[in-house]
Length: 101
Image (tube, rainbow, N blue to C red):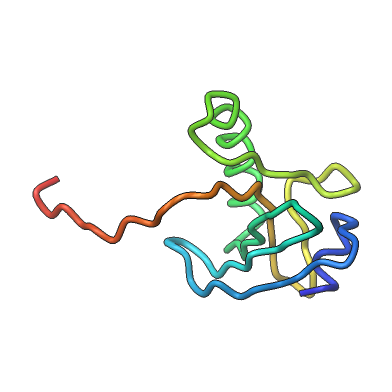
């Protein structure tokens, strides 16, 4: 994962696998007092689309901000796999599924 994080120029990151998220594999990245979520994406299209959505929703504090790479890209491509880096929002995961919806 260190080679992926070079796209964001993060110094001395601590990487903690947090397993599968709702839609992708994810890692918690800690750099000094800052925390991020690094997610593996399914495609370039997902990277661009999620960035556009998060760009609007993060202003409303509904979604974490997705951080562009050092080159300004909305995601990183490394060895044919796609990744994005999001701000970490401290909270509690809810494991309730309301089947009546």
